[in-house]
Structures are given as structure tokens and as C-alpha cells.
Length: 77
Image 1 (cartoon, helix red, strand yellow):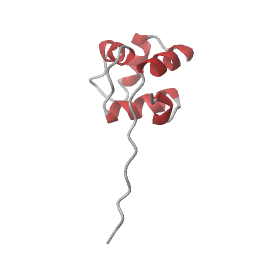
Image 2 (image 1 turned 90 degrees about the vertical axis):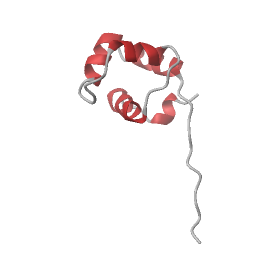
Image 3 (image 1 turned 135 degrees about the vertical axis):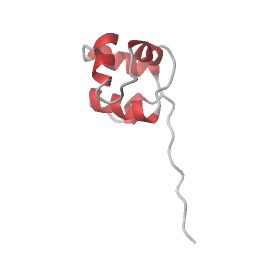
């Protein structure tokens, strides 16, 4: 019998994301432009939503981490 390990899950913190984005000098628009390298559907409105309580998909979470050079845990509540 194989042992299943429970996968950790984290709740996204919009406050931590917004603070880190601003600390690194990214405006909503510039961050959205950079996201276009990862997804053609990225938009300023999408980044705004993350700033104000919405959680990104896994695809976008990985892009956020690459752009801001942080781990997903950095954005956990």
C-alpha cells in the first residue's frame, strides 16, 4: 500500500501581492504587459482583481512568482 501525502494548499493574500508588486515598482498596466509573455489573456483588469481579493489561477500564480521572483508561499495568508 502506498502512502498518500496531503498536498499543502494556501489561500492567496491580495494584500501581500499588491505590496510586493508596488515594492518592486510595477504598475497595474506594466505588470499586465509583462504577464502577456505568459498568457495572451492577461489584462490590467485581471491584475486589479488580484489586488482586490480575487485569487489567480495556478497558471497565473506561477507567472506572478516568476515575475516577482518569489515562491507561492510568499503570497499566502
